[in-house]
Image (cartoon, rainbow, N blue to C red; front, side, top):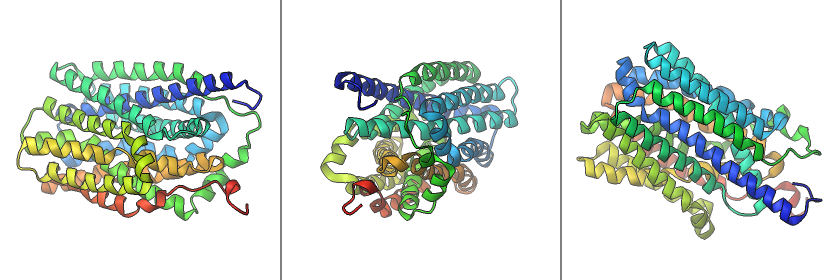
Length: 404
């Protein structure tokens, strides 16, 4: 959108871009949750212990962590649209390959390779769609980042719900996840055509390697990254382990465990849909502190609960607590539009180390204390997220500050 565009044309363009961003967020969540919903079945198919499952899930995190440090540079070079499209191609292909690794190949190595591709594609896609979302948010002059992440959560609700149904119907993992992979690739390729065009006069230096390296030396950016890491751990533990923890700890069927995960993402979606209103009323700091406290309480109820109904209440509280930390962190990283790509890349890189450390940590604790008790790590992450919430206070761009 340029200054020469008529107002109505410019508004249509940014509104179309906003809708495209909603869609790519939703498809990202749909693909991710589709895999997560089938983890209990994959665990059973490959006959994995909690520790072995943790190591397998580590491949997904490694792929994401490898992608994230350079994603800001890639977005600056080729734009958010192309980065999202390439990421979805890798993610969808990785999902298909991982599904065939479970059956007929029955190969842990094949599944790990597919998960690494899924993680790499999802990681680069994640940074790019957040950068595009922040740009649209600024153009509309509305606080809509939580709604973009709500679209992601709606996608996870659909993915988890369909996954639970496929599990109940005993649809083979390769059949289910292959269809999901194809949907991911096709829908994203069509959606990114409507992203905002790259500005002709953009300054590539602002999104260069030097900009990313500079962002790694900024104290505020690093602490925002720690806050995002905390909430990524709160969410990631539920993604990876909630269904398994419910199955093992409460002696329920795999389909019921998948339904528990679907309930978590539903609660998280409701929290994100309410996020814009809550932020307008209470501000980032209060919302983050309450979110951390809710995650602590909810995860503790699931890990220590005496019954399934008690755990169900805990799942809802946990999901609401997990809802807003990540999107608030992305908005905080993108407060200065000139440094948004670099800072979002750094914050995402720090945040995604939760997915790197989480699976083996939870697997190790699960081997010794049981997977259900291991969910207490999410409660500890809630306390950490609340403690560093002040880092996300609104930062004015340098060129708008008094005396600049």
